[in-house]
Length: 464
Image (cartoon, rainbow, N blue to C red; front, side, top):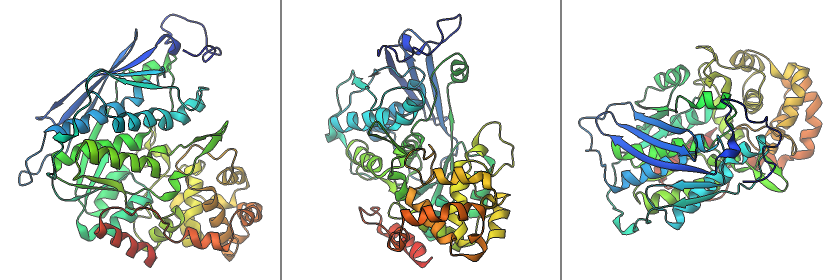
């Protein structure tokens, strides 16, 4: 272990969990119960606690649908999910060695998971005073599978759209509604259930239950922090393809997610690593070459900025009283009907993205407060454009925030608000008219490999 990494932590006391005492994290056995559609995932630290996580596909299978394919592709999907979900337990001690006890890894698979435990945990490392890049080695005990077992047979045919409660997924849902997508949510809260009801589309519900003892371990000194949750949800969706018979998974992730949140000693640290374009490319390669070449997974909104997506969301005229991106409502202690806290980076960023496209009174009604009228919010809005203290949150590019402020500065009902008066001149230095036009147009790069989805998204976004 690295000397001095935990020097500022208290000395050993009874019942104290000591991260430095653990030299390896072990990814153990797993099982799948077809009767309950429940995956059980086992993990352990050397000389320490063990963990069991369960993931249950709660929604019943369609009796008239395809017979579930629980062959090698499904097993390989579970293998990758098992390793990815392990980040939630690895982080308790963050040792330098991860041991996969059952099943080998090809070079593609090993590279994918190494990035997940390095890039995907860099924010966690920074907030816990650990080095980045992460000095982690993934060691698989088994023999890598021969890719010749891969089958060209599709698990089914259909479109799945994961939904999280924010505006991006609702824009995608409206774009592809005519394609009759199946919606998908892991541990949906009441707000998400209300959005699904408003959308009027079928939903697959998955319950992910973390090891019950994890919270107690955190109380006793285990390390804690952000994990690449989108990677875990995406791999759950890939496994679900074999149960529910769909072949296309369209995520609603914008191109802005690829910008690093901060540089730490020259090393990029991205809160949204598992939403970034590099991760998406790695996930696509992993699935096509080790799970099934017939499964498509990626973001259908990747060419578009948050600013363009927000313009399209405002244009739909739907979901304004229901959607929410404020993470406080997803915490266990949040009120049943909580929506916006009005004082966090997500609330500020959503306000900034929507303000140019909705009226001031309507935005105030949506959020429950006029954030731009409050001088105390200026510092928080400024951080969205900062190279130094951009918040570790799912917020867009610095220049997107600047572009929105540039727009607000010439809209009479917004121009005199304290936030716009204070930050408008800063925004003008960060983005010009050409940059604004670029942000509202689709970017270049690989298109989502489902032409009908691409066409539907383009029609809605360009029409906005």
